[in-house]
Each structure stands twice: as C-alpha cells, then as structure tokens.
Length: 466
Image (cartoon, rainbow, N blue to C red; front, side, top):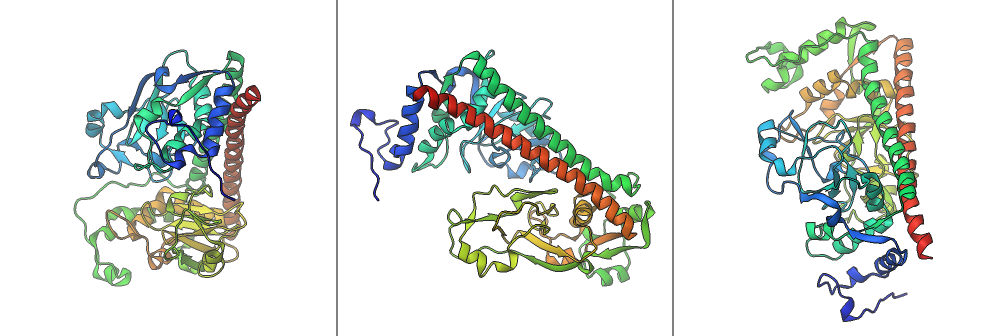
C-alpha cells in the first residue's frame, strides 16, 4: 500500500524538497521530540568545539607503529574499537594535525559509512588523531554520557538519518551536526542515564581486559621468554631451504622468523617433533566469495568480511546482507555454524576467531577463510596460536602482497603449529576458552546496558509526549 506525506512549503527545511527527507517516520519522531516539552538545544550551542577531523589523502603517511588514527570504522555506538584493522600515523604528522586530535571525553560522530554512530573517547585512551569524523567537545557542566545516550537513541539518530537519506553527498556535514536538537533532561533523570552508560562502558573495559589476558595464556603456559623480533640488515639462507619452501623473496627468510621457531621449541611442553603444518590439523578449509551482481544492502543473511573478524571475536552486527537463496545454493559451502574457525586472509591477515552463538544463517566473503578442525584439536588453542605474537609473525612471513597482504590458502595450510601432549593441549585450550567466554559474557552485558540507556532516553521522551 502506498504511503505519502503532505507538507506545506513553509515546512520545508534545509532547502530539501526530496520525499525521503519527509518520510512519515522522521516527521513522527520530530513531532514526539517537540511535544515532549523538554527544552531543546542545538548541539552546536552545547560545545566548546565542534569540528571535522582531517579530510584529505593520507594513506602515504600510514605506518606500522605510531599514533592511532581513528576513522569511521572505529566508531561504534558508545565506544571506540581499535582492535579491528588499526591504522597509525607518525608522531610528526600527528603534530601537524592538531585540529583533529582527540582527547578523553570528546564525543565522536561518524560522517559516512554508518553515519551517526556516536562514541566517547574513554579516560586513559592513548594519544589519537582522527580522519573524516566529527569531534564534539562539550562545555563544562554538560553530562557527556547523557548526550551520548541521546545521540545514539532513535530520537538522536533520526536527525542524522533523515539528512543522509536521499541526499546527494550521502554523509553528515558539520552544519547538520550543529543543528541536532538535544533535550535537556532533569538532573535526576540524567544521573540515572549516566549510571547505566558508565556501567556499560565499565563492562566493555572488563571484556577487553579479559580478551587481552586470553592472548597471554598461551605464552605463559608454554613458558616462552621474550623473543627477539629486531630487524637484521643483512642475512643469508641456504639453497636447500629455498628449494624446500619454494619461496624466492628475501622477506620470507628474515632471521626473526627463525628466532620465533627456535624460541617456541625451547619453551616448556613442546613435544620433540615441535611443529606440524596447519594443513594436517584441518578437515575442511576454504574461503568465501561474493555473489555476482548482488546488492549487499539487501538480503536476509549476515555477510561477514575481514572487518568483522578480530582476535577471538566475530561481529555478526554487519549491515551487509545476502539473499537466503544465495546462502543455500552457491554459498552453501561457507554457511557458518558454531565451532567453525574464521581467519582473515586479506588486509590485516591472521585475525582468528571461533564462531559461537552463530545466527540461524550467516556467511563470509572472499577475505575470510573458514576452517573446520579434525577431532582432538582444541579450537581455542588453535585460535590462540594464530592470535599470539609468534603466530602473527609467522602469518606475516607466509603472506604475500606487500602493501595489501594476502594469505593464500596454500600458505595457510603450511603455517607451523606447535605440538603438545594431548592432555596439556586440552588443558591450555580449556583455560583460553574459559577466559574468552567470560570476556564474551561481559561484552554481552555491556551491550545490554547500553541498549538499556537508549531505551531509557526514548521512554522519557515518549512518556512526556503521550
């Protein structure tokens, strides 16, 4: 059934005459927000600073270590995520971009991608810069966590969505951000909202700490001392090694890779045979692909890319979708199920996670490898090896492509895997699994609390408007 809305010319806003801007759901939310009776103030009037992070080409400045550069993909609802594909810039370049530097307490709003995601820079966050993100620094006396909850609620997001919907540019500009209307809640209600958000952010920090400790269990249990990863200017290798590896590039033979292997062999609990190739541990190994001529903004089945796989974690909250018929036919071989292992093989290669709590249907694209292990191999021990410092370096060794690394399935099969007594293998794997599951539980609690904060905001507005 057709739906339409009629408005008078006096109701036109921002010179917009396109129907998308005046969709009934947008107009209804605006009506409720105004009817609630709270004092509405423009976001721009609440700030000491509202500006856009650096806009322009800067990929030439990217480096392996340095100052974190926050981009749209790092900004989720309420929080910053730098675990997935972090980007760094040199300190000198950071100093040139003082206008786009961010500080604890700043509110960050995405301009493109999922426009309108809003996060806060937490306390003790390291020095960071930003690119193409709106930076909001509130005036003293204004509760940033209350504003944060509102901006992520339905009554904050619609003000961004209606501007982006149908627009030529398709992104949030500074003028629109300044004009977002923010209600002034009574002090007690603000305190209640802030407490829930604080609790949610605290649970997020707990989850991150647990994930970090999961990384350390393997090294601690294997008794690995610090491994020398320093760079050596000149080195040589034997022709027999080249013939065996069938790799002719010098990077493959960097001494640090051999030092890693030797360091692991000297550790506790490693069996005399040391390593086996990953290919001998798997019963199934493949990677996904993207259906031809398919719009990934439509469909019923979550479609994961490399950005949705990080160390120990799979993010099913993707906005990419494929049709159920594609999932059941041409992509049936990569239909996910609990217990599967996913490894990123393009871009930031080697991130490894065990699939748990998988939706009824989910699939992967060509940048992710799917592994099903043979019986007796602990999935969390396997993931921990890839996510360890040693595993990351050995993945780097086997990757090709330089600027855009790629881990081919053949090279993945040849990745060395440490061999332990089966009892120790299971014990360590169980320790890692227990820690990761605790982290996941804390992450879910955080998500529930932050959703609760949004619902509190929406309920306050809807009740007052009724």
